[in-house]
Image (cartoon, rainbow over all chains, first blue to last red; front, side, top):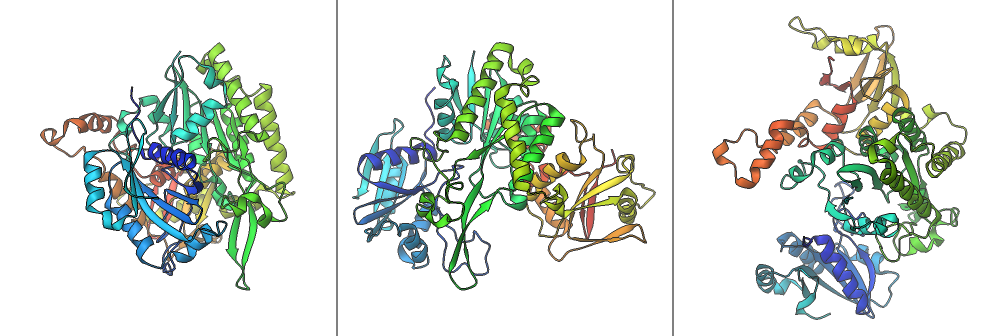
Length: 151
Length: 420
């Protein structure tokens, strides 16, 4: 029986691909992995400890660039919203700086997504391309395809 | 022989297989995803076999390994700090496994690094250490069920950097002092002695199950050296880390009050209306343990701590009915009125309606009220599961666990209790 392409498999495939291409993994997370790094918002006063927390699915660095991923099997607008907040507001800058502190050279940051390779996901990536620096599609047999931007 | 590894994450399942004799089994083990409950995965939970659903009744472990549809062990893994009540957060799922006759293996860090803001505006970086009462609680589970419930330390830098957490190489890289595996980076370092002991324990449980049969081997596992030695290690860790404290001086027992059951019955008299009298179960036990939680009604870590209190202080037999004491959870601040043989319960944070709302929310997940003609084809097996089990698997985790372990749940403005 063919294994279902899950968010875990997409993330783990991307991690292997990034390592093979010279990226250093800073943190990663997929459902129930218990891993991941929580980025806290400056504006969480009054909320619970976890309010406003964003946990990127992958953070990796190479030379002067850091990349942040949100991964899903199917396109989800929530991920685009999270990326827009990370990209457009200054609310998470302190938390991102702390995360990247051991990697002094990372001056540029790019934000993107990895999804299962389907016609609908490709269509959505095209539709929201202005919100993304890059996008990957992962096929059922775990082939990786950079379909938007460059890293 | 067909081996199935049910898992929360594929990576952890692959790690366990690669590091144990499961890798030698032919045909290779099948990997299958564990869906936690009907409450959080209504689309898939009903597809699990019934014997797996029973283990998941209270809470889901990270791995269940079975041979020919007979579970042979479960594994729970945590990377979080296990101080105070938090040490017992996952206890109910360990109990559920053992209560179903399935050995439970628990991987938990001895300590993890936590950064806290200090009074001078800086940051204090210290190790948060595991509450040693967890060892005693697991030992009580083994005493009662005669089935292994063993803890192995998630590898950390604690022993090398106990007095200088900041210098831990796994603090600098944001890993809170815990050591991960090179090949399976969300998993514990497989070269560590604790993990090597875990793999030996798994191999022994596996070989016994293959030779003697899963069911027959279970009751004879505790005397086996690999299991017995781990139990001795746990006992020595308990005594070494308790530093002479009595168990009553350790969380969560510090939040437990022991009262004459008459106090509880007098408190509950307010609900004896219309000729109704509280039933025989509560009256049958002269004393009652009340776990007092002065917090808003919520889940973790309290349901797991309640389960641990049951095993440490109330249980005398395999069923939760076999207790020396009633076990009650009270949400609020409880003051004994010795003269009036009762108590008062006050809270600004908790309300019976917080619990009732959770129960209503669970009921929203039930599809039993749908007309047959309105059911989609894919819903019919789920509907049929709910016909058999009602809301057993669709209640939220905290409602399931608390209503399983507590003989009564008290709020300042309402209560639920068992009559039998």
